[in-house]
Image (cartoon, rainbow, N blue to C red; front, side):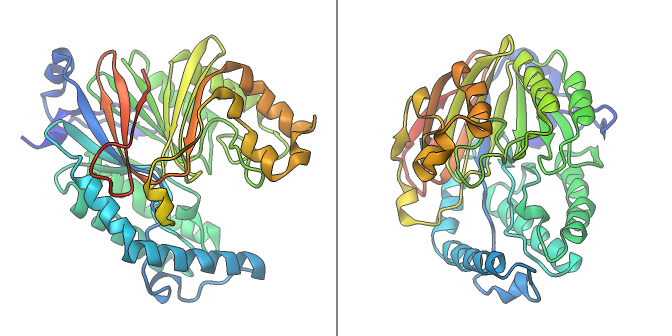
Length: 377
């Protein structure tokens, strides 16, 4: 039996339903544990920048120069360390693995045409699927780099033309949007596009997930303010002026009411944040597979207490630690944080899900042994 036969998919206004097999209900009743192998951001790229970035340009010369440095970084890590990271991840797949998940920024982006962008996406999807688990669904979520090019609107349309159709083939249902839902047994996986957050769609997807045993939210960005002086506002429904504060708090209450587990990327860190508030709980696990520096192939915890939340921001720009709008945002979340940990480490991850026990095992770089276990529930 194909492992995908264990899936049961449901859908509302965003996704139409399709059943792959009759075994899901038996699987759910059995209470069997299952696991998901996960890669964080990957920024897949070629050693030769001209392969995907020919004709790339940006109206801001400084920004273009920074992006071209990223092309070199990516080329080096994908010619060296990152294939070893993927081989390590492939070894985590076993008979209880139901699908493979990637947390967005699948590719570097920064392409000149829709055709190149589509080829970039297809090459990355095919490589990861083949190298990790050819017979399992490979699921990804939209990241900001996946939607970036000479004309963001053009490459975003290329992503929307390609990825929902590809996710439809991977999961065996009709996906027409970058926000969608699928179920694994009694568990709901709500996939959200943080670059185009639509509260009405999020609301509908959560309504469709009503009654789930566990609710997992798959989103590229964190749902909590990002501890970074340069990018602190890059979180779901966040922005510098906090103009979507009402929607942000509504979605936060929605997630808390389901005791949601958020799986995300974007920050290029391995991080756990456990928050209690709005009458519920949100546990966020942030993951990275951008092995840019050799040192990131080892687990070295930098912060291991709630008091450390926001410390990077202030260390980088002390003025942001003064009373004001930025601290107002962080102070809105600080009282509810019970656990907080982060490390500048990249690798692969294995999510294990049972009725009462949910944990993530992290393997730094290409480590043969587990580097850290994060207990989510």
